[in-house]
Length: 602
Image (cartoon, rainbow, N blue to C red; front, side, top):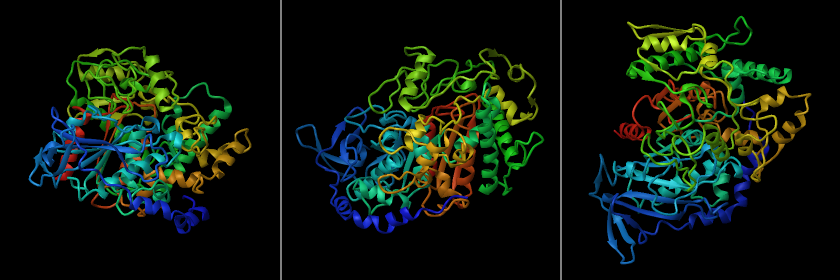
């Protein structure tokens, strides 16, 4: 299905590393953590240190440092008299359910739109996904790393996080914690990079990139678990999945745009039929041509339809009625603005603070965009987020329902879903939901919010175009399927030129795209299958109403991860009524993530 790696990559892997001996030596000589320079936060009982270099030859020292935040019980600290401490591991120390030897480490990936993530410069109350003390109070060590963003071009961001993980293990003789139990977590572009980190452990494709920044080459970057909220990933077919799933909600397309939309939807069917996915029972998941000729039938289609039905069933069983729904938001359906949930834009839920904690969102770099019941109209809030993540969204309300009332009973809610025509039936006695079609759901609640194409725009200015640019902040095309569809058009030359370009290490975009595609490592349909050490544990959550990516994105990731080996454990849920957010059926995302980590450690 995928091209073999180019001879250029072979040259880099076989010969190129010989051209980097100095960098390898620099990595070997990389200073370890200075155990005499720890600081202490008494209120949270946390020893911490920031400004730690994890790369000997950083490409951007403004980002490529990290902080470590360690529960106080794990260290014996001796004051230096200047506010710093000499620390040694307290072998008897215990916090939460862990000891200094068994404590897991987490690495937050707070990179909306694959943006850069600034490293902490002091003691930070927030790491993007709750507060530091939320984790340290439970005995979890926080590895808080800065990383380059999409402006640096893929695979810079994931390379940096891998280097930080390797550096932590490089210090295993000095630091507490179970270095075999690292968990990544992220949402949106951060969820995508968390998924890539989870899938690509110790991938050889990253070796020259790690060597180039002077990363530690003698340690592993594989993680034990990966938490992914609404991951914007699987970018090699993301455009095609988007059109297959949500193309029916578009209106006002030109004849040319409609041709591209239809072509991408058909190409997604070919992709699925070659992906060899199976469900939990081993049933092969395929798409077959439906009466309309658009491949909206088959076992894969039925599986997607079942995911939607199950999501609504869970909502009805979880929700106490009377229930007040929010109005339809710009990012798809009831969920409203990204990062929000509930009946207004009050409780933060997007990695920018826990729901209802009253804190403004923190992107991890000191910038404080205004959301929710903070200042600004919804349009202002969209503009602020788009400035941050570089993703262009539009509001599509041709079909969408507006659910903004209080519903006294579950049947009242079902009636509201059917207000524009019946597409949902519900058996109250068994809490069984049946929908007429996937298309009916998307028309009602999951409208397209991105133009053609959703990720590789014809005018390459979308955030993902920047990601697959070449480090100068300019966008580049990367979708080979779309490139075949635009042949003969004004876009053909630009696509051909971008797909043939090489980065500084001689790799074309198809290689870099594979590096940023978790399924490349998880599915036997790709050449990357079994060339890495994927995570054993996966937790994937998505707001079903989001218009940022197709529902297929999370479904395919979950299915591929679950079938990788028998020992892989995948906890996957789509959350009804929520959009592009840290979607959870109940409770806070931070508490639920911590509980999941604890389960994985048992």
